[in-house]
Length: 137
Figure 1 (cartoon, rainbow, N blue to C red):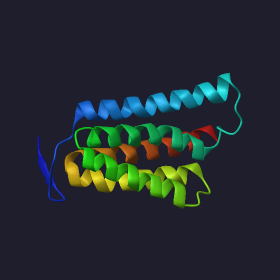
Figure 2 (cartoon, one colour; figure 1 turned 90 degrees about the vertical axis):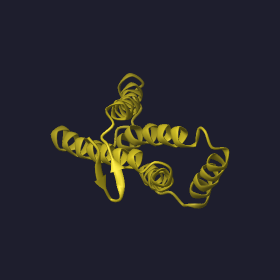
Figure 3 (cartoon, rainbow, N blue to C red; figure 1 turned 90 degrees about the horizontal axis):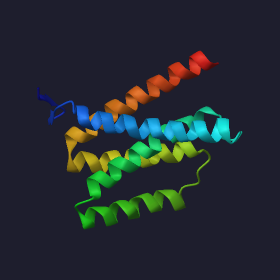
Figure 4 (cartoon, rainbow, N blue to C red; figure 1 turned 135 degrees about the horizontal axis):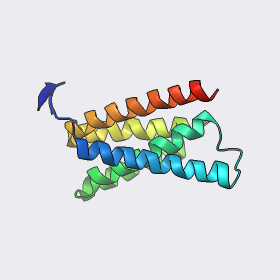
């Protein structure tokens, strides 16, 4: 079923959502390995949980959008490197949010449907992390 949403023919993509979930789940698994098995103390805060769940997803979306377009890939690398090297980052999750916002802007231009699915999934991840934080603390 296709719905017109924000001037985009929106269709909930089950396959994309499964891939988004896999990206986030594997990132959280790596966080689990490093925090429990390796006993890394720095990784056990909320900010790092957010980074490990959203950064693999953002990386996947960046590569899937720019994979067939060399000009778009060079522009994306340039934009992300400017943000990374010229922005004083106080917190790793702040950098992830900047990457998500840049990725979202570019993905909306390329495929609005994919961008809406991306935002819905990020919303779900943030809600689940907040629920986890409430339960765990």
